[in-house]
Image (cartoon, rainbow over all chains, first blue to last red; front, top):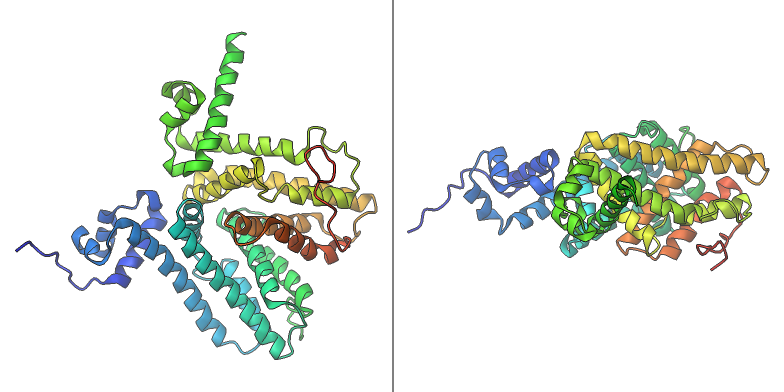
Length: 203
Length: 213
């Protein structure tokens, strides 16, 4: 009988979190299974028991970190009653006030240029991002907070603006502060949705 | 040909090869030996001109940006007598990943994002490139205001920030095939139109000679 890896208490979610931490620190290119095992306090064979390959582990680590972001955001949005408040929360989540993870997201974007699997993952996650915004726009229109506009078009527009600004925040561009991002994004949303968002005024 | 000119030629060939290779293989996947082979020089000459991988990436990016800049600005710069609206439209077009030099420059740009997020010492390069773009747009907008062709109450720096962010956000989606480039172009125009007092439709895209396509 061949020796079986000790699985201890370490399971997939812990391993994915450990993998994300290693990718964040060393970059995907230099993330080794041994580092991930160390981070999780287990052995390399135990890591490979749960994941068929390093590539699969890394892909799932990237995906689960992003999914974690969207799940947290969805929970936070559910606790806000007004559509206006929800939209402001979305903008803040992209403006660096949240556990938004630029390093992992950049890894995904750059890899997705050359890896069809990761390209599909990126497209799926981008769809979630846009749907999150479009749902809030629809919600605001149903409540009469927002004016008429195509929710999906507004979602692409805001997602594009926020992604572009998030790049500059991630690069620590001193010109683009979270306050600047908030102002630019909310001004654009105000115009598209015919609604005051910035000054705390009512719609 | 003297030695200095040969040297310059080799350096430029290395950069041109690096741009092609990085766009194809990514900065992590690219091999220096392969760049040397493409450029027809020895690996040691690549290391002589560029001490580190980051130095090569940084200068390849600068080089790509300058090449794209020739497309961006046109060989004669502003010689096409565009009004501010036409000029702004032409500038926006040059920040979208149209097939060819611009698309390749875009791919390197995404590599720069990743590299700069991971390596803080690459961030000054990124900041410098962004500052240059921001200035370029802000100057064009300030000039348009001065000429009375754009709304007088605009803040050129803020408009420049918005244009750059939108072109990054839409451009990356075009690059991934989420949307058609013409759709991205018209959506960007629509988003800027009211604030800047621009006409309903963007002027037609110019070809590299400055004539409508």
